[in-house]
Each structure stands twice: as C-alpha cells, then as structure tokens.
Image 1: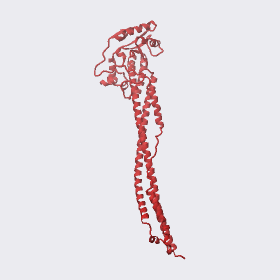
Image 2: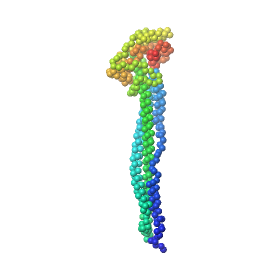
Image 3: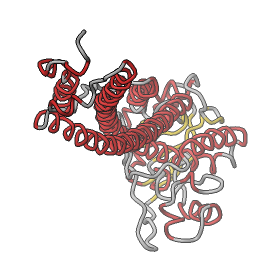
Image 4: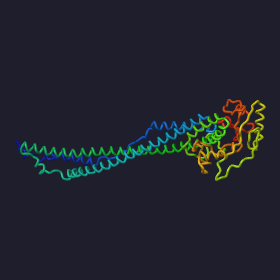
Length: 422
C-alpha cells in the first residue's frame, strides 16, 4: 500500500487549482469592464398642475380680449377672474418646479457622496485582491509548501482539507465583496445621474414657469389699467348722479366697488392695453397745475365746451323732431373731484392725481380722467329720467343718430355719451 507520504510531486498542479482560479478571478475583478453608466432620462411628463396652468393661460388670453371699457360688468369681472386664476396657477407651477428641482439636486448630491465612499471601498478591495493575484502568479506555492499539507493520517488529511477550504472561502468572499461593491457603485452612479437629469428638467420647467408668470402678470396689469380707466369714468359719474338719482347712483357705485375690489393690489402698468382699448384721457398734471377751465356754453340747460356747442344743439333739435325729449348734464368742475380725492385718498400730489381709484377708501376717480371735466361729455336723460338701459327709447335714438353729431357711447354706461371717437 502506498504511503500518503509517497505522493508524487506530479499532483502539485492539481493541488494549486484554487490559487490559479483565485488569481484569475482576482484579475477579472480588477481589470473588468469600467464602471459607470449613463441613464437616459426622458423629459418629465407634464403633470396635471402644469396642464391646468396651460388651460388657464389660454382662458386668460381669451379674457384679455374683453374690452374693459365697453363690455358688461359681468364680462369684465369674468375676465379679471380668469387672469387672477392664471397668475395664481403660474405661481403654483413655478413654486412646485423649484421645489422639485431642489429635491432632485439634493438627491443627486447624496448619491454622488455615496458613490464617492463606495468608490473608495472598491479601491481598497481592488488593492487587496491585487496583492493576492500578484502573489498567486509571481509566487505560486512550491512542492515544499504543498508537502506541509500532505497528511500522514486521516486526521491530518481532514485538517489539511479544512485549511484549504477556509482559504478558498476567504478568497471567494473577497471576490464576492468586489462584485457587490462594483454593483452598488454602478447603482449609485446611475441614481446620481438620474437625479441630476431630473433636477435639470425641473430647473428648465421653473424657468419656463417664471416666463409664463411674467406674461400672466403683465397681461393682468395691462387689463387692470383698462379697468381703472373705466373706474375713473364710472366713479366720477356715480358721485355726481347720486345727487340726481339716488338709486342709479347706488347701482353705479356698487358695480364700481366690485370692479375696484377685483383689481386692488394689482400693480399698475401704465396705459391700458388689449383688444379695443382706448386711452384718450388726459394724463394727470404734475405739481399743482390744474386743468384749464374750457370755454363753456350752455345749450338747452346742458353746459358743454363751446367747441362742441353747435353739435349738441343740432343733436337735441334732431331728437326733439323725432319725439325724443333729451336733457342732461355736461361739464363738471374737477375741483369737486379733487376734494373727494383729498378726503378719500390722501393729500399728497400722488394721492390726489395718480393713486389708482381702487387704492382709495372708498374707491374714488382720479381728477382729469373724465370727459365731463373738459366739457366733452353728457349724461343724457330722456323724458326726465336718466337713460339706464339700452332698451330706453332715448338710448335707441342716440345709438342710431348720435354718431352723426360726433357723440359716442361709453358702453358700460348707457347714459354717458362723449366725443372720444372724434
């Protein structure tokens, strides 16, 4: 029987397979494919909030075409509501896009931090495996070393196998750690790339939302300027007409107050703009220069600027010939309006002449914005009553004939006719 000690040295290559396999695995782990992956992150799908904002934007564009000077109270109020909702919606989209951009940026930063630590761990494992691999290839186990593991008895053989198995498991553990660490690093790099792409997408959304918000605010401000011009006309009439017809005065004041509440707080943007806008009013004077009082002429009880007296006379005569008895009120001294502004708005030059009417308490028209103060407007009465509807016979006649004499209606006020169209 052959003694265990007489094992041929030719078995040495067989006994060194673990070292060779380990070295091969180690080199594969070290010199494997480069780590790093690029995530193709598509554009973030348009979310419901953005979709709703787009719808509101289109509604606001339509609303901006409603003429604030000529349209009904309800139409103007609806337009203002649409624009306010558009501004709020764009603000919400901007806020959410910025929040998501910040969250994604934070996620990217954390993923990059994790990847950096994992990369350091991977470098340490690679260095460890490299040392094993070099030793396995450069210094393979010799015959003398292997003889130490050759057993003279079954017990020694079991001990030898246990030692070799322990070494094999240890080697395999290192390789497994290397692989899992590489996989974790790839995952963290992918997560960082995805988060960075998401942050860039949300930042672009925020930039677009900011531009949309700017457009919405400009649109709202321009329309509010038209509404304020309407308020200057309406409130001036309300203050005067309430002394002649209390019920009509209260109606006008209530409508004007609703409009004032709808635009209060909206910054002024200068002159009105939009479809059908008209801004023929005289700008408020600077300093203490009042508007010059025009030359005045009274025609059948209606005082107007002398420059239009003949036209007024012709209009009244034509109406009378058709059986329509027109009367009314024309010129108003703007000093009365200045007094109201001092009372309701303040005593500074800005408060008197420039402060928006809705900023006063109660809302009060700016002096100089009414055609009455230039003697170029008339609030008509028919058969002794103010014309307060378009079905009134006086309005029907004026609508058909006033243009021949150079007078045009302020559509929001059936009784108000002036020369702004000439």
